[in-house]
Image (cartoon, rainbow, N blue to C red):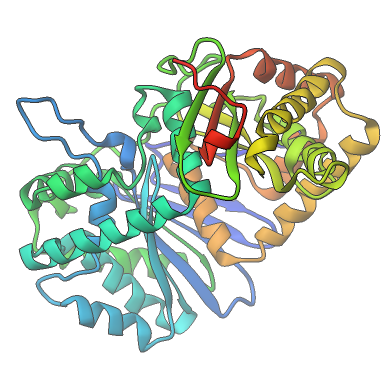
Length: 457
């Protein structure tokens, strides 16, 4: 069985052959890391500036000092709002005039600013992204404007009851763990945010040791390294001096079966009353960490249980009984915690029946495993969807960054599929049994008063 490509933090240069392409990696003495995957014949490229800080790294209000909850997402917005050399309009037009697809994302363990451009325009995109990440002025007037924008974004999410159920579910399963907090913060924390506190978060968290630049598509590695270093050297900030040696940062990976900080004990049912014709249900528990060797068995189990229209949840709840339009299962894995869940949207009066059906399907897999036909179908689904995803430079760019910021192990398609095809029926049953044995959390958002559910303490 082939081994993944390892990304040592003390190795200045690395080259590896991939699926018809070439992976190259440079670790600069400043701690900056630059990775590329060249895709032959590609005439476009996607480049991302990834910072190893997410919502979990924010500080809660301690009483004697204000917290920074929501600051990471606030920064994602503010870094588009101006630098000493470009105002917000100039940043926007810099991307629009070359037809770029550009955006940013905040996650629980990282933040990314990215652009997909014609290969000939890659140098210009790198210059703008570097300027944004390194030299944002975080103007006071723009700060107040963006506060209102973020509040509207949170209001929009609050109107989507499936989103609300997802946030409540993470909070309930992970308890006081920082990963349980919502990525965007709460309206009250955004209203209370101060420009100086967000700026302090920016100054503390953003520097070369936390920055990873990745690009995939029609990209030349040596040129990209040259462009990135030139852009960072142009920044007027001592924090971004590339003359200072720094140890590159990677989030520590924990070991063990469960997330130590998760607080659930016994089944808990949490209700959020909202006017709605449906009730949005999340049923699940703690999941697997990102480096757990059982994650490949989980991937197959999840595919069979709730990964498509032929899955057990979809067939049992929707196709056979007509109790829901949507039913699926999912997993979310992080460096020291994970979540497993099943989602169903149903009529409030059917909530108890749907929860029992979903839970029963998990228990069946835990007790009896899956059939050979289900096993074969899941492998085909995983292999096909993975290959299709890698046709896109966006996916390949993100794959590089997540490997670098996370485990430090890069699995190409063939290496990953070898792990999936090595999974046995017993492996799948055991991972289902592990999840089925853990304390269960049920989150219901909608017209709970018409259901038969009773909230637990």
